[in-house]
Image (cartoon, rainbow, N blue to C red; front, side, top):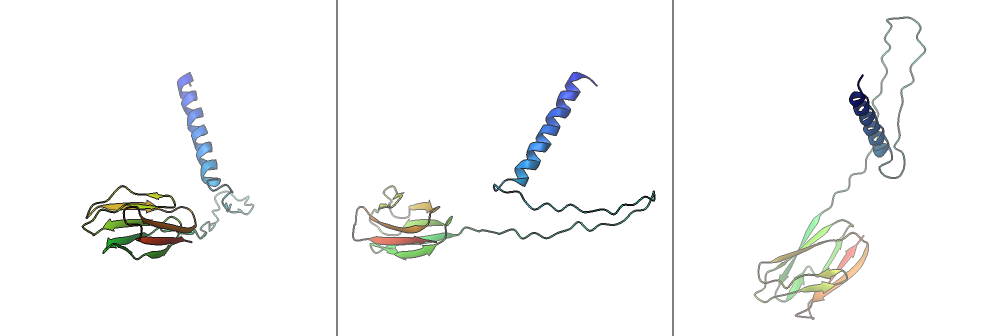
Length: 143
């Protein structure tokens, strides 16, 4: 074998080893690996079927998108319960401009028909209001 072929083989093996450990430890802990145990068979040509299919439950998390309408100088709904990873889209349906300000929120000034979205990645109660119309208030509760 020439030198280039050996280098390519070493690179491919290194990529396979790194990929194996990446998938095995991708969440900081090793995944359950089930290795089938084959019986000691000394007779040549004898094939023993081994069941290797296992079912490991994988938690499925789906994020949702919620809509808050700005209408008649109010947020509708004004209070909303969501989960971590969910997104809220505010839509200005008023003729007047509005700007959402609050805990980690700072939208641009929105004219009628414009939207602002925010994904929440931390739990807690986040209060917000319109900077132009301070009587407009709302609260987002993230579980």
